Length: 252
Image (cartoon, rainbow, N blue to C red; front, side):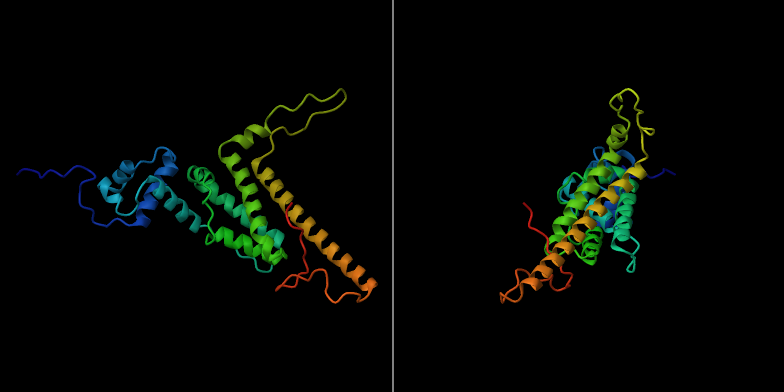
């Protein structure tokens, strides 16, 4: 009895139909294994045991495929909700969980960090970050720019971690110390400690701005009280609707 020949791989009829979710999952596995540059539509079709042309019914091209994979991974971001925790602790936890996700898929995230549309308004990370800044008392008009700056700093540090630059920079030889001075005891700090230092710096800066703003608000109110009610309109009002009283200067 003659054994029937199977059609070439990639031309067989699939038992399970292709879906965007399945395509993105398979693409992510290939990216995790070999990197973004190694991903091709033909390799992806082979991994899915599908005809390469059938992929184009779900994704128009490779760039759209990569954007879809990045969105799928971003949607998987999860962080522990600490409603009663201080906003400083919530930011630390949020950034640390984001870093964990980046190290889980370093090849994809290194690519995604270079794309300007990587973070979208509906992303869980962005939603949690802006909600935390609102809870901290940041004026509504300043939440988005502050969140954008925080993302830029954190993503910049993570990019340097993933491509090895941070490790290399932290091990650069220091300038030869002057006579009688000692060089730094630790020429290669751990990346975990450096990331915590970045978060501490960001949080300290935001704390300082909030405190300074509050002091300025209080000083203005004292001056207004001493001067009496010589004007019918105050020079500024408290934040609405949260009533935090913050008044931040416009960017220069």
